[in-house]
Image (cartoon, rainbow, N blue to C red; front, top):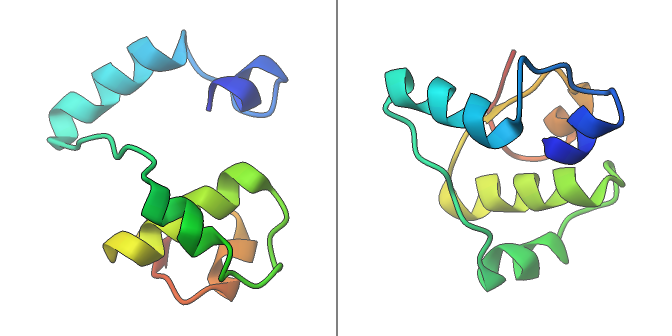
Length: 84
């Protein structure tokens, strides 16, 4: 998120670490660390999405049985639930 914010692709009202803390609290949400299994899962993904950061997010969602929240329609090419 910080990289996308710094290049102008993700407008945020402040630093990512501060903004995320503020957003996570009312949602009772937690962060998910990138584990070696997530990286391994990314090798199995088809190349519908070439962004390496997004591919890790997709691999995490698959490995953890999670839903992605994104407006990026490319995520629907993978077998994960997508909301937006």
